[in-house]
Image 1 (cartoon, rainbow, N blue to C red):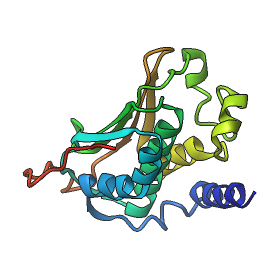
Image 2 (tube, helix red, strand yellow; image 1 turned 135 degrees about the vertical axis):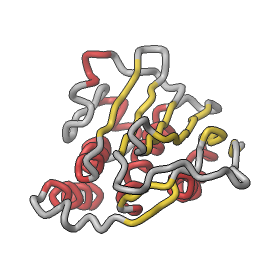
Image 3 (cartoon, rainbow, N blue to C red; image 1 turned 90 degrees about the vertical axis):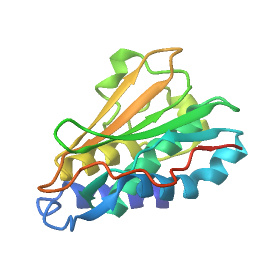
Image 4 (cartoon, one colour; image 1 turned 60 degrees about the horizontal axis):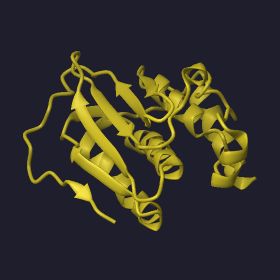
Length: 194
């Protein structure tokens, strides 16, 4: 109940007319945002023998509200861990978009989602398989929060999935003036094995 209340309060703040004014964006490195999320969720992945592969995570400079983007990514990675089979791999990647923005991708090896559910996935409390989702926990608000975090950044979230083929969620955030360029690679980390 506490988690639901907290998520509803987050949504209320993101939906408010002043949400964009309170955004307080700052320059951030996409790879560092991913690393912060991986560090927080690694114990959950290890508990299920899931590998978090981030060989394709690139350093891309962007202007965002870092805590909000980390929250969105954490929701996507957490879902991927929950719905993937034990011993599988969740792949994370970042890249620059054609317009100089940044794209975060989270791909899992889970059961996949039929196309008829894609449009409603980001609605509050919507679950593809209610019985299974109840067993895995969660509030049913995570993807809705991701959608609203994308919206306050003038971005979007996309899903590509099919039964038996896993799912890929993409958080795409546009460039802000003068930023969004790819940073030269320095000591990029790779796969986290569990």
